[in-house]
Image 1 (tube, rainbow, N blue to C red):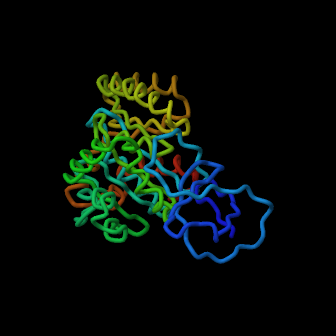
Image 2 (cartoon, rainbow, N blue to C red; image 1 turned 90 degrees about the vertical axis):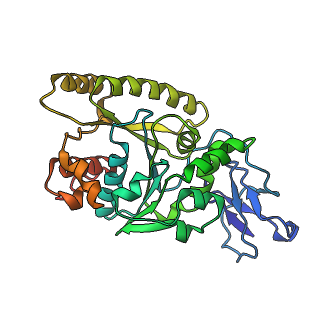
Image 3 (tube, helix red, strand yellow; image 1 turned 180 degrees about the vertical axis):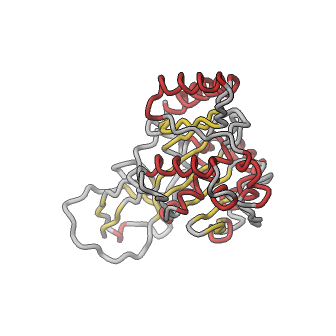
Amino acid sequence: MIITCPHCKKQHNIDEKRIPPNVKMARCQGCGQQFPLDIPRAESPAPPPPQSATVEAAPAPVPTPATPSSQETRRIGVSLSKGGVGKTTTAVNLAAGLALAGKKVLLVDTDTQGQSSFMLGVKPKGGLTELVTGELPPQEAIIQARKNLWILAGGKSLAGLKRLIDRKDYGGELTIAQALTPLEKNYDYVVVDTSPGWDPLTVNVLFYVNELMTPVSLEVMSIQGFGEFLKSIASIQKFRKEIELRYILPTFRDMRVKRGSEFLGEIEKIYGEKVCAPIRYNVRLSEAPAYGQTIFEFAPGSNGAQDYRELVRKVTGEPDLFT
């Protein structure tokens, strides 16, 4: 019987007669990842001689350095340990913009405030906590908020998920990754909004996403928080080499404030192409959530909508979008 590892796509030749009936998981010798066994399986056409796989009852996962994923789904975390920089606004409007561009997007809210669902005007009966604990199946925990856009909500119940993670003897930092990885194949992008601060959920996000987008408001306290956040990311990269700071997004750009322009120039000088076009200060961005609308719905001609369209173009690498 030929099986294919869903993580690294390596094919393995396994004698199904030797698999004990109670074994439901296999571990790939190529990438070391576990994956479920479907028994019985139809015989696949003979491929080039594959390596053999070791089939065993899966033990509790132990945190190990992850190997690069060959999956097409892009996982983007919107994160900075300082609050008030526009993380949720960015996560929601980035996800909505990608959906408008025809991409299938899952927005995951890991903040106990649960503002992502509020901004989209939806009231889910569950979300990330219920998915992880098994209280709701994925088709009930994940709800469609717009065409091409689905949301896995946060909220107060995430406080219980934090306690669940803290009680784990090992592997707690992989809790969210284990819940989301089997689902991500249904989407082109998974955009994860994080809470301010540094807590178990933020660490979980950093053990799941491969790309980081960091909103930085152009004022001194945010710049200082950005420096501290980079140190924290460096500690995560010791275990996950593939996580990368891909996008630095200046927010609350106000042309009347000279110091903000100086901060922007300094960031661009250091980080070059990682710096996105700034999100200009725009009152429409703060008004839209009260109506449960994205900026593209509430004020499609505003500076905020224009700036987030430009962000979508940069993320997708498709400069002709929305033209």
